Image (cartoon, rainbow, N blue to C red; front, side, top):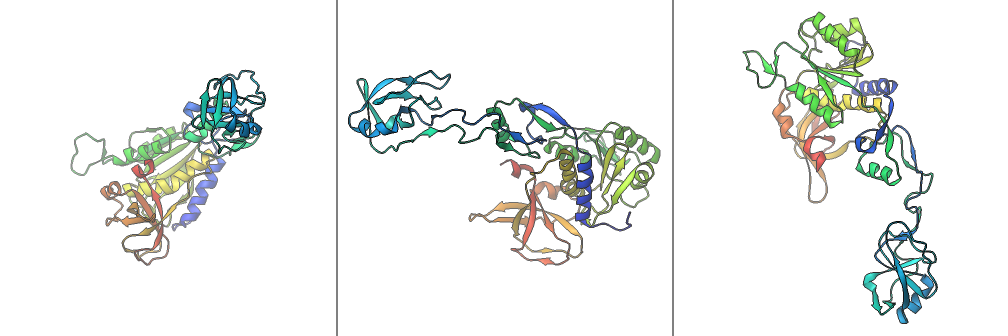
Length: 409
């Protein structure tokens, strides 16, 4: 293990490789419970969609070759067809059938004229000109062909994908089991929100932050009591969690202070894959294995927690579930200048917006300290300043990752 920080890309690739090697199992999951899960096998259509030729409109079904006569003499109305179990109706030359949207096209019919272009006179229907033969018909298989691949393994199952599965008659899908995650904050100074504080104590905000970000990824968590600043008691708690969980996420205790015990404990009780990444904030991030669990130790400052979770923990969880369709980062123009004086990859906070002419812009928040939580709450995106240290002028193109309410609009 190197003493210095490793490049961010190396850290990311390490986490993705190790996460993929600890892929979670496939679980048959009812559609109503599968939203946000990852499909673990290609899905092939067990039937065609539509499964039969049907009407795209309310109107009258007829033979296309009768259209010319229909506009002059009209056609004999021979019955009606509604959506539902198809009646064994056929269509003779010179006749038409009233039909509703979605109803099976009767044998012999190949065209539907919408009801607005039809006039019923007695038992005959006359049609206005302008309908082409074959109009207003949905043909079997025009959406999905029998046996075709409709969803790819690694797809995140959203409402549209689940609706498609239901349309194909499926009631369950093979979905990756969500990784089980234990969350630890650390430090004797932490107190739960609502409790009285003594001088030197702080509220445990990282617990809520971490659990909320994991919930956004569809993962329910158990938050354990804060890890104490005591090596044996800390090791005992982590040992217990490592026997029961796929992933342990901690925050705090990973730097180089006298109470930063976690790196040494992981070296003694598990394996360290890396410690320290050339990024800001979040440089002392720790990644390793403890027992059966992967352990990700995040720094303690809340903005560091946000940056390392979103850019390292989320790819790890994706790799463990086989997710392949995470949306690529956006690009936006800086709306104000930014000064960068170091060579590490840096994540800043800002407000992402879209101009009237459709150009994305990000307005940097003036606060840059990793302890400044208010700036994160006032922003809606992280933006990336790449490794080289330089001044970024307004209009510079930067990578942006939205978070919070902007994703739900």
